Image 1 (cartoon, rainbow, N blue to C red):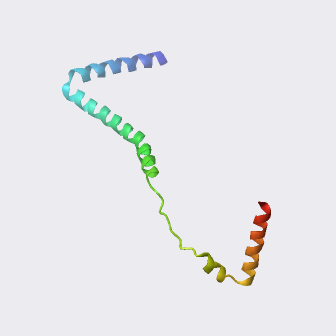
Image 2: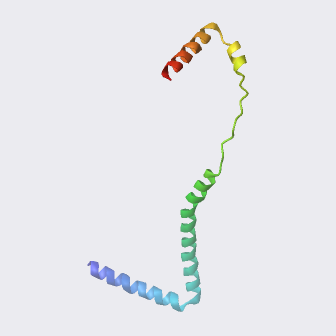
Image 3: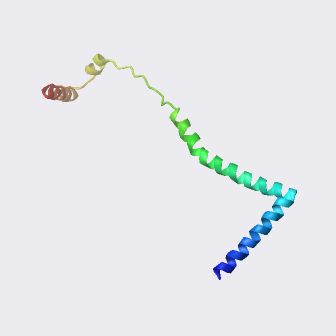
Length: 95
């Protein structure tokens, strides 16, 4: 059964190939369809590459902060100042 179907499909493909090869209008339509499919596949394969390469060129914005240490220390309350001193002494013991 499978051999009969394969033989029928082979004969049909031969007939279509001969028909397309001999008829210029059908050949042009066939080449247009095949070419469109190939171009579409190439486009689909290249899209991720283009997107990823464009993402690599984006630089995040930089933020500049004006930090004045003396103003920061002067505005601390007593509890925060004690916590800061504890952290500083612990950092010095690590050295």
